[in-house]
Image 1 (cartoon, one colour):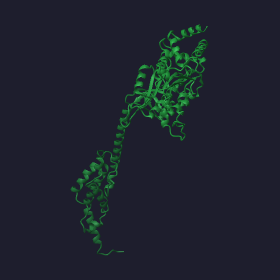
Image 2 (cartoon, rainbow, N blue to C red):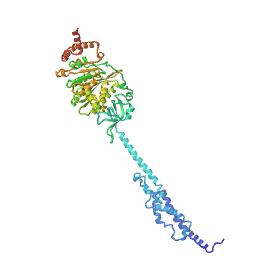
Image 3 (tube, rainbow, N blue to C red):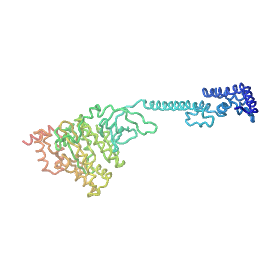
Image 4 (cartoon, one colour):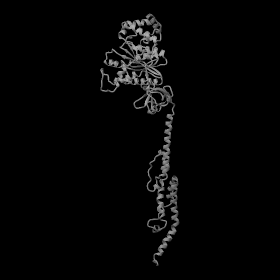
Length: 523
């Protein structure tokens, strides 16, 4: 069908107008497209080109009210280029922020682009995250290297006695048996791995404490009780060892002038594994007897490990004992709390048990078991059953456990405990404690206050002093001579008996000569 004659020239005019303007429109659209592609490829280059493009090229949009621009075919291309050009010409582009990300120390939450910035800001965010992770990894490496430097610091050799706490971990007591600032921490895993027990002498390597730590820490264990840790794991348990009567004698006689040691050698011989009780009133010379026993045992039996435990004693007596005894002196003086008395006592007991498990012969001289029982009576939780004198019924179990540990072990090793007990103090509690321990020993030395008041030393009561199964420690001839001697002395007054014995002993050079002379006179 034919078209209206008036419309065809209009269409031709629009087509001709579009063809005349086409080269200018195409050239204008290519410049924003090139700027957009450059912005996607390189962020800094896109910023510079997009900033220069609007000033060099006029706006591609046709003037308002031009009907030819609305019907031209190139019009759909311009709206797609305008947002891209706007993103490139944005005054706050995302690309420079990504370049500045390392300066923000790995900022992982930059501002999200809006509008036309979304398309041009997606890709620069990836280098920003990678740079943040690299920075974080670098800081982690620095921290790890710092920790490694602290762990690689030189270690210090250390030796101490292990004290295991109720929580399972422990400390090496490096300054004796009491707590100190230089103690070394031992973890629960180390105690389980090496089979450590309370009282072990542990030697190893120690690192210094860190900034937030109070104690040094044990890093490596070299020896346990002087042997390899693997060998120490195979040792027996003390409570499973078989106790026997003492069979090997501990000689006390050292020289002819040591009257007290010679008298004790005759009347109450001491063997390895003896459990002896030295009963003494105040000011009867028990401390002097202990010192003579310690020096005699250390002189005649150097293979024995000697310990002197002083509980609730005077500080000056501790100093005197340390200077006059060749052995290990462990003390908790009366000015220290009862908790310290208990802790020291228990640790000494565990220490000597570990030595006996290794086959050693150990001698412990305790002064006194009465004060030890008093300390446990103060620290034991109340059971509700109070004995006469205010003694809790459960408070005497730990002292009995300590005193009862003395024994001669079948197959090697022994633990000898000689403890003093106070009597005639005027305290009902002391009397109750003595009655509880009265029949537990197999050797007893009784000191007489009346003899001490007459200045007769040693003030030993001959009739009540003696040793059970003494024939196991003496030769048959010696035992027969001692029994005859007792028969003679028993008929005399205690003061006259001890004075006669002291006189006859001083007339001879040794006990063998004294017994020979006694046998000749008996014939």
